[in-house]
Image (cartoon, rainbow, N blue to C red; front, side, top):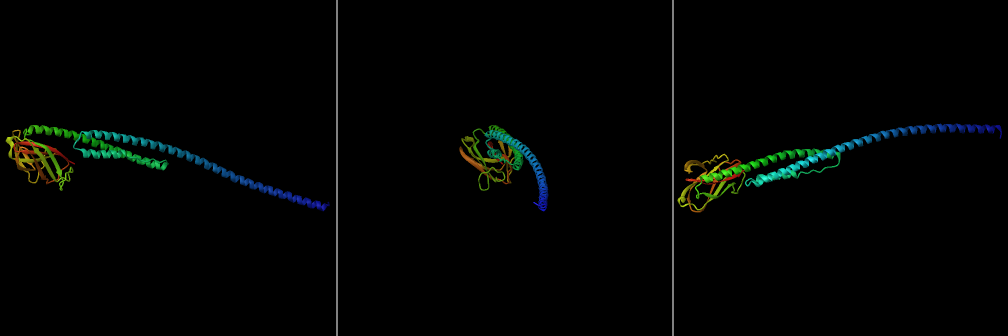
Length: 309
């Protein structure tokens, strides 16, 4: 091997060494750059992970709070429903002692039973729970308001029952004091009628009153033609006056009494008979209790009450 060849080999080795150095330096730079980028991405992912963990913790806390509030509202709704049931029971107890207010009690029962049937479905998501909680709050307010109304109606029904009892006692005392012994009306029936003749308890639809009664075992000295009068009074004992009222005097307990009758007519009184008065009302009657009274010239034959709503 000559000197020239050695020189060429040395040059080639130098070139290869320089190329190796350049390649190594370039590769190291790229690796360091890639490591820096990956490290930054790892840091960003760690921050994102931490943020997501905090969000999950916050959502779990919010869900727990809303769930607790939902359970509390469910308890309030259950308590309100139990209170409504007790009010329904109290109303039914008062209803047993009333014979002339069935329709009012029926409407009250429907209202309270509707309240008891209130139900809502609870959802699991936070948004749906919040919406349902608002619905439950409104339902609770409605239940409390309607329950207060129901309690008031139960109290009023009880008061009406007591008023009816007092009115019955007063009527029985009046009849005992004012009637003529065996000469008295029995089996009295009072009906308020519509224009078509059907019975009604609606004050705005009543256009006619029909009163029928029996006279049985009439004593001999009361037989024959006698005037019979129909008087209608309201709760305050004020007579209902027609366009052509009959104003007259009758004898009650041995004393004269002025009466204002809807109508009067002469009747041939027999020992046993049933009589009926049918009178067209000139004005609409208001809601409340009314008392139909049958008089003759020598006293009160009988009376019966009726209620308009």
